[in-house]
Length: 361
Image (cartoon, rainbow, N blue to C red; front, side, top):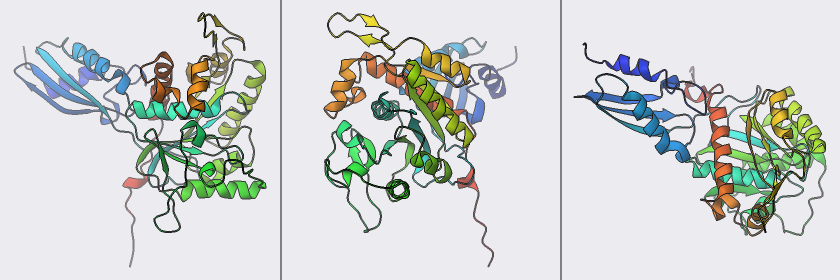
């Protein structure tokens, strides 16, 4: 029998399908440093999305798969990840310091979008990414309270501002720049200008993902975002209730019309869990979000229960993923974060940073 070659092993691994992207792990040059000595195989697998929660299991599964090959006595697999910038809508350019911007929108208020945004950001961080969150709700900023951050951001040069820090996240919100009880009485153009300053004047530091917590509706800020901000993709948050789904569909269609891909849909408040007896009841209906995702051919990222602990933790400045990192709710958020990041990983990449500037003198 002829000896195994590197090409044989790579060909075998090309048939191993990543459970989240549903593509070969060999895609996009994901196999590195392959060595085979006396039947002992070592290989590094680089994913395009953070996956700390499934890293060990994936390493074991790939090793088992490799040991099916004749000539492989043992296999040592190391799984890591490198998040790359992805394509943005036409007419915009990626921003330095941020690889991917993800807008989290709902179409209407009261569905838990801001709570979902901050926990999604923390979950992406827990999975191994560098993450920031921009509170784009100029009229009703909530991220400072949810993350337990107070004070004013500093400015190193009088023009740009340093992001605030909360639970490891880089954070910016108009809530840091005005008093908590001061209403933002601004017309549309001033609101969009304020959003542009929050985004562009903040010194974001090497972020894999910037989560943009959008205001409800489909108004001026949403249009500004679509026309001038380099958004990689969007996530829609809804509840199973019919009235919420109507507005969520409008939000989804808005992103489609402006060329921003919808990476997935999250159903919040899918089940009410009684804090006394743990009985589960679908008080807002059942399956609406999943059905909507199917109708619009977008990924269903997951469903969250209506659980009192989620509300209590955000009200006290320590969102659920940070407050109970090993809990059941945090596990749901982290699974959704992996699904979101994997959904983005298969989208078109942005290679503008690799194209050199040609200057003719």
